[in-house]
Length: 385
Image 1: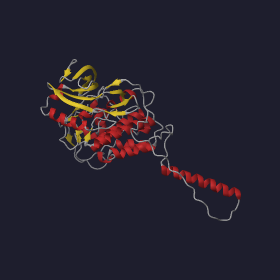
Image 2: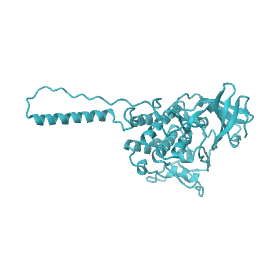
Image 3: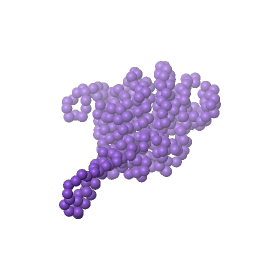
Image 4: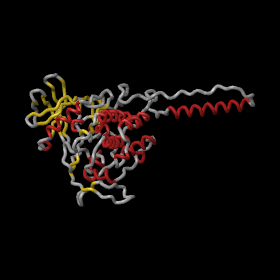
């Protein structure tokens, strides 16, 4: 598709990227005179006669997500069978591009994760499941803010499964896909938390939890294999953060944190204080305990040096709690100097994982100790790569 004008309003100038479900163009809104990113759904996904209705309904719902860490959706439309989304144009580059240069520092990874989780919390409160939380869909802006994009193809929780897929089709990026997506199960906010766990794992270690020779092989590793802890692939990861990542990567949704808000609280405890220079922060209780211990030790030393003293009233030591951490997505948080500003669009991905399709069947209960639960779905013989 070459440059054109959609509905006499959106002037498509040049292609910015192409992914598994759509291609993205740099455009100009003639009515408002602003630069936008226009996502065009692939032609093969337009075959479903009900897709346009679903697509428009979901896109309008996502457009109501007004949040500083979510790329805004301005418009959705259909021009002679071409379904498109008009989105905020973001100056910056994708997290995928950043990770191509290697893993992040622990501090940098936590700062990004806090803002991503804040976006997922807002989506969950609106009943929206992203289903494709990947580094390619996370943008790092020039002013240090994180923007989660590609909510235009999200699914509303509570609606019929498979808004953009058939019952045997998996929508998402295999490297960051939750087990329930692979097996065709029900998705909810915990599905996005699994994706966040994969992204956080990649930020800390420089590689995703699972790698393989084919998308199908990687997808089924998410279902059947256990990734080594992030700390096994990199030294210096705090134990609390290591446990959090492991919890996010639990195979069954019931074993993961319940909500993005719960994860956000845990991440905020791990966030560095603005004046700490990136050093780990002591929690108030730990700091108070340490202060009392020091005061007691010093008092004992002084008593021992001065000799026996007549008992008398003594003032109790006072200890101040630690200062609160900076809030998620705070404008005062700056991106590392290594993040140059370069115009990209929400879907301009440096590497695209193909959509995988596989027919699955339900697995019966095989008894305790096999690591699987009744009702799991597995590939038919010969389907795994």
